[in-house]
Length: 359
Length: 152
Image 1 (cartoon, rainbow over the protein chains, first blue to last red):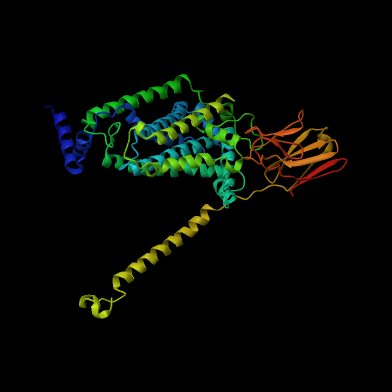
Image 2: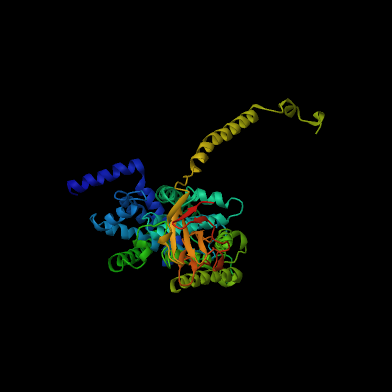
């Protein structure tokens, strides 16, 4: 053994004697087992977590050049895009990372619901996952306020205005969300605080809890028709079997991300996202981002007082789904009512989104 | 259970023992501390920015032709003033649905909300769309030279 490799081997032993990290990782990766049927779709939760880390890193980098003031925010974003070396790359990775994270979380959510993996003993894992889903959308909403473009301003106006329809405390809630009666600098500051600290901190805690619960309860085995458990399914170690699946899906998502960044950077851009906010001029045919189009369509179809009632009701029902669907059956065909409900929700989301895109 | 039926060891235990008293004191201290910290935090979070701006705006009546509209700002809020056949109409330009700014369509003599398609007549009454309340009226006074708009 050469002198250099002997010294690095000594260094590894030296640190291992103090932190035991290699032994810990070895136990976690090699001894942790999963059902053999766990396929690539299972990795989507991990992809969402990876994209969250991408958002944290690119977000922190953007903070170095971004000015958190409504008078200067738009210009600072323009400066990042045009003058800061590779600023366009960091910003577009952050923007498209957010879109992909929403997609990964959505698919992961429906996949878990389809497999009935919210049932005992994973009820808490499901509920924490629902909170993470809500926080992901909250991060997306607060994030696109920060460039302070027309879409930022008017999305904030309509979303906060809808709070007024909450009985008894609506007006106070709206003022609290806006930081005043009108959308303005106070609203901007609250969105900034939420996006940069409150939501990421909450997500970090909940992701840790989510992973700890998954570690404790394990991944659910494939549901079998007429059976309450997955049965005697072969188990495989996390490393290398599942780690390879994670790596494949993470690599695929990075390929999609960079293809969007380099070849189609205007995919999700709307004209209103390129114009600074004007509080006295709502652009014609303004639309939110695609993942809120369904919300916007419901706001068009329903009076303000109940515009957000259907989504709150549906999200509430999904949150308590493990306590509504108490049967031990997990196969989709053994849960016709839940499957019917989920399919309806998915169809409603898709139809409302398409309506928003096409009309 | 009467005192005679109680175990002698149980009879010697005081009704209010030290552990219970300490527990009560700790709980009280925790609640008190939470309230002491919570009240300033609640006050801090609920501090709201006041709306500033003028409560009265005037402009030259020659600026508006028949059925033309002008947007003025009263205390930070847009107000639309329209010259009609028999005078002037002033209404808040904030849509009562979800707060977008309505636009005046001179050809149709209607206000139209670009967000969700609400429509209002020149006096702010709802003609269609998801809005349920009319546009808020605003006081307007006109003379030969000047039009004055003021907050109600």
